[in-house]
Every structure is written in structure tokens, then in C-alpha cells.
Image 1 (tube, rainbow, N blue to C red):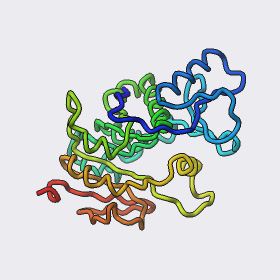
Image 2 (image 1 turned 60 degrees about the vertical axis):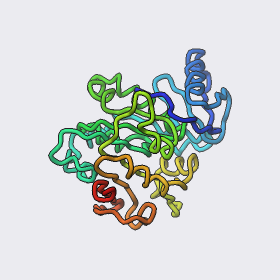
Image 3 (image 1 turned 90 degrees about the vertical axis):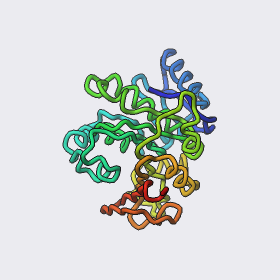
Image 4 (image 1 turned 180 degrees about the vertical axis):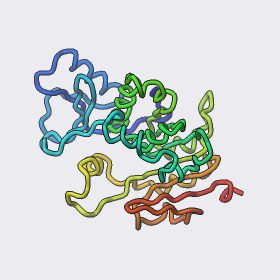
Length: 274
């Protein structure tokens, strides 16, 4: 379920709109979506980035580039279903990185949730995952995907109890995580996957990443997240980075797990904080 905002949401000029010849009911739904996330509803816009309200889902589109396609959060997709059923389970690199081996569950705070794919993988392995997303546009997409997953015959049995979205700035929420009333549980693991700039502009950069960079830009304050994450996590902080990228905040981790395209930097808080 979507939790109340714990700090002021970021405003963004990406509008919510509807397809041509939309029904009055769909227009009302789009207006409700815009109001919920502090966005502007615009019934007629033919260019630029926009959240397009469809009857059964919400999508992000570059309206004047129809070939780019839409971004939709769909936890029932074939790709995520295959990964959930055949992706290696607790032998997956991300599961090893958070320290899930030998445990049934961990409480993970994904402070840079994005479209929620890593959070979904961890939740499917039994973790309880709280997610933070600062962009109202991305948060709207993610919550839409969570709502539809909660209505799915199979996913609805566990997604509502294992995935929860908080909309706000990660830096503020990490610092004030336990200041709420009632207080929110301190996580075992804080997971960070800040957006890293892709300098090569070619087909290898996925449409999703290109749209996200256009929408959000790189996480200029990513280095600032490490210190409050280390102070909050009971066990470890895991940072996902592209292979070859510098350490977050120039701080060397206790463990580096190298992959072909990415690596996981693991900071053990009991060592660092003692």
C-alpha cells in the first residue's frame, strides 16, 4: 500500500494526459492521478514527456517520438515472471549482496526505487521491502504497478505485505526514518542504486534509461546518501554501481561483488560503526 508522503513531494512539469477520444471516466481518472501526485492535468498535449492515463494502467511516453514506446511498471511481465521463477533465487547476485543466504527474510529499504524491479526480486525471495522514490512521475508509475500486482491472482497473495512505497527525497527520509509516529522499523539493509550518467548516446542505452535521464538527470546528490544509509542500516548498505564507476562518496566497501555490467559494493555497518 502507498504510504503518506513523509516530506514535501518534488514538483515536476511532466503532465498527466489522456489518449484522443478519451471517455469522461478516463479523464476523471487522469485528473485524480494528477492531483494525487501533485502533477498537472493537460487534456491536449502532443509533444514532450507525459504520463498517459490508460484505462487499466499508467504509462510514460515521449509523445512526439511514438517509436520510442512506453514505460509501464508491470510486475506480471514475462521477463519478471521468468526471473522470479527461474532466476536463481537466493543464488542471485543481489540476494548474496544483501546477505540473504541462510535467512528466510530481511527488511530492506530501497532508497532509490525507480521502477521497483530490484525491490520486486527481493520481495519475491521473501524480503519485506520499503521503497523510496523522490520523483512524483516515477512514483506514480511504480504505485500503479503495485496496485495492479496487488489485484493479480498470484502476486496479490504477497506483494501488498512485502512491498511498500514512500514518496519523498531519500536524503530526508533516511535521516528522519525513525522520527515518524509511530516509528518505522529500522531496516536490516539499505539498498542504493543511484542513477549514473550514460555518456554514450547510442542504441545500447535502453529507451527507459534515455527517458529517465531526460526526466530526472543523474543523481547529483547520490554521494550524500551513503552516510545516513550507514547510520540507519542494522546490518549493511549495498550500493549497485556500473562496473568501473567510482565508489559512492569515494568510500571503499568491505566487499566488492563484480559482474559483467554492474557490481555490488557492500558496506558492513557493524564494522564501520564500531
